[in-house]
Length: 440
Ligand SMILES: NC(=O)c1ccc[n+]([C@@H]2O[C@H](COP(=O)([O-])OP(=O)(O)OC[C@H]3O[C@@H](n4cnc5c(N)ncnc54)[C@H](O)[C@@H]3O)[C@@H](O)[C@H]2O)c1
Image (cartoon, rainbow, N blue to C red; front, side, top):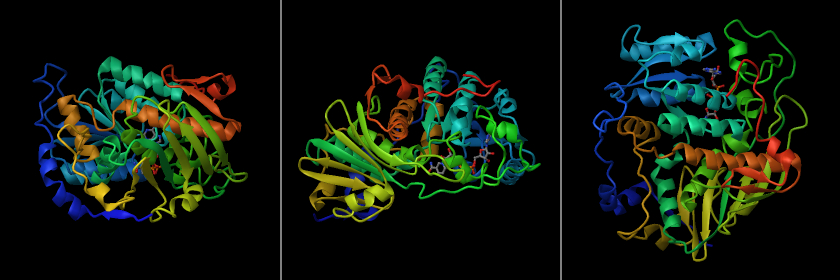
C-alpha cells in the first residue's frame, strides 16, 4: 500500500490557522483561583539524577519561572555533579544535594519533584511526595505494582496534586496529529491498533557478587526492593531497565510510549483492554530477567484490537506497509491507516494527512513540551497532557501483557473494578511486598 508522509514544514504551514486557534490559554495563577499557591517561581527538586534525570533536569533549567533548590541521589558523585551544574546555572550554593529523599520532601519551600529513579522507586516516591504536598513529574513507567499505583491515585486525589507522566510523545505534533486523525475517524471507524517498541534483545549482566562502591548508598538505592548482592551491572541504567525486582523491562519501560499513544488516539485514557492473550520469551541466563520479546493481542470492550509487540516480532508485520522504525503506533480504520513514530507521520493515502478537521472536531491538548506543560499546570492547577489516569491505564496494559507471558495463559480484565477476572494467581502478580520499613 502506498505510504504518504508529512514533513514538519508542510504540517506547520497547513496547520498554522488551527494552531492559532489552539494557542495555550493564559495562565491563571493558583492563588487567583483560590487554591494553594506555589511560590512565584515553581521550585523544584530532582529525585534521581542518572542519565534520564540529568537530561530532564536540563530541560527544566531552560524555564525562567522554575528553579531547582535540591537534587537527590544515593550516588554521591551523581548528586554532586547535578548540584555543580545547577549552582553554575543559578549562582553559588543555590542548590542542596541530598542522599535521602525524605530530607527533600520535608522542605516546605519545594513545590514539585521530578522523579527519574529506576522504576520500582517511582510510585513509592510519588506517594511520599503527594503526602508531603508536592506536585510531581514522574518518569514512565509507573513501576512494578499496579496495587501500589492505586494508592498513588488516592493520594493525588486527596491532595489535588498535579501529575505529569514522563511520556513526552504527547508533546510532539506528529503524535498529536496521528491521534486527532484517529479520534476524528479520518481513517474511518477504528478497527485495530498496532503498537511496538524496542526489546531487550538478549541475556546480559554479570551475576558475580561484589562490594558496593563507597560512592553509593546501596540500601537507599534498593529501597522497597528485596536485598540482593551488589554486582557490577545491577545499579547501571541497564540494570535499572532489565531486572525484574526494579522494573518489568521494556514491555513497560519502552512500551509505555507507543501504548500511551494508542490509548490517546482511541480516547481510552480512562480504561484498558478487557482481554489479553499471546506469547513471549524470558532470558535464561545472566542478570536480566525481564520479558525479552513479546507478541500480545488485546481487545477493548468496544471491539477494537490492540496488537502490542516487541520490535523483533513487529518488523515482518510492519515493514510490508510502512518504513521500518523500531517503535511506533498505527491506527487502522475501515478506510485507511495512519502511523506515527518519533521520526515520521505516514498514512495509507496522502489525502488522509492533509484532512482539515472541522470546527466540531475532537481536538487534543497541544502541549508546549512535557516540562513546560507541567510547569503551566502547577501554576494553573489544570490537568497536564499526561495526567495520572493516562499513566495508570496504559501501564495496566504492560503489566497484563507481562503477566500473560509469565503465566503462559490468556487473561480477562475488568477495567471498572481494575481487577483480573477469575485468575487469582495472575491477580497476585500485580502486587508486590515492600521490604521493611517501606510501606504504602
Ligand atoms: N521518557 C523517556 O524517554 C525515558 C528515557 C530513558 C529513561 N527513562 C526512565 O527514567 C528512569 C531512570 O532511567 P535512567 O536511564 O536515568 O537510569 P539510571 O540508573 O541512570 O538513573 C536512575 C537514578 O536514580 C537514582 N536513585 C535510586 N534510588 C533513588 C532514590 N531513592 N532517590 C533518588 N534517586 C534514586 C539512582 O542512583 C540513579 O542515579 C527510568 O524509569 C526509565 O524508564 C525515560
